[in-house]
Length: 309
Image (cartoon, rainbow, N blue to C red; front, side):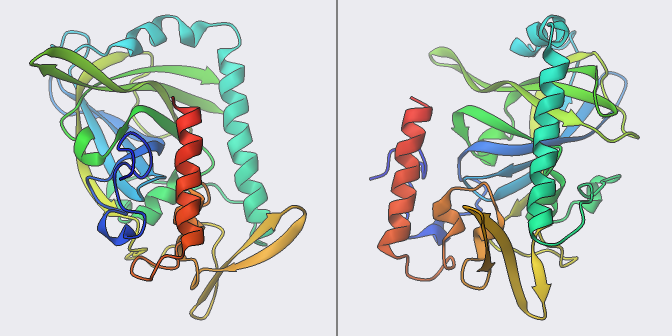
């Protein structure tokens, strides 16, 4: 039986169709990007983030409904972050380098595929996100990766207590940076479980109402859920590097100096470039899984035990 604390979190590697892309499937790593914030009422604010689980292929639009510092829920470590870390010497430059590195990585991947660099899809309305592929795309380039101390599913996140702290930084252009937290409090016995703490998300584009340098605590709610294992998109969108020729879809990838063409009919999940190699090499959800691919899953699990003891 697989270790429930590490990928695949107690699931059967030979039967990905039973868990991949599901609402209750856990992932330690989530792509994230801040979509926007707005006042919901006199005292209630909403801060919305797009999430894509790299280990689960589960995607969602989630909102932290917050009450500010006067609320009953503590924003936790995010308060300390906003008061100090955002003003720490060198913090803006480190953030800037992180975003520049991700942007350069995206440009390199697109250059290999022969496509001109373009910014991730600009989302002005949440309704424009209507698939896991849309969320995957919008998180590229300027998104960040949220690392969970406790592996989390969307079912875990829904209803979880949380906090958000924001501040402005100077970099490529005007940008907002937010620190988010998520925690569950049990009463018997009294215990707080921190799922993710002080994780950064960015808002690069203008036009959204952010919280500036504010701090807020509240409740996370899943607004929309999408199954990334189905590869369905109403607008027939695809991840940015995918090349289509008729019914054929391929990705050009550079390995040790050589450019190889990977057919997505044979490896449909290879498009999710930073998911575990086990997922990327799956022939399909319902095909027989070769032992060599099962071994990729086991190797990834062992690596995670070293990285996350």
